[in-house]
Image (cartoon, rainbow, N blue to C red; front, side, top):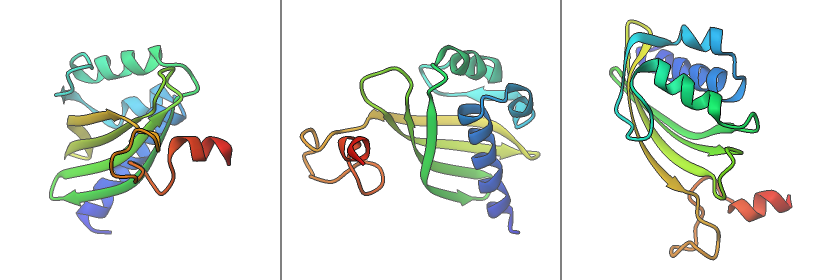
Length: 136
């Protein structure tokens, strides 16, 4: 397994463990004690991230569509749904890996557009609009 493959697997496992499984004890081990949070809506450190996740309903679901890695950086195109807001968030999460732990994070978040709200006529995540997923 290449370094990039290991880093991608680490990030996918960490995100699934924290956001979907809500296994905080196991997830704690994925994030560095000196974790740096650049997101404007999350308090500093891994404590800030975990505090935020604990306030979100248990219906939270995270899924990824695309993951890329170069050197110590991983970018995940994902969707956060079931968080209690009207629209799911589509995110590009950028994570820096250091010593096998998630050491630093940046994100770009946007409410997921419906078909009516999409100027391009294309979904933001995967190949279906949110209302098409609900109907399935």
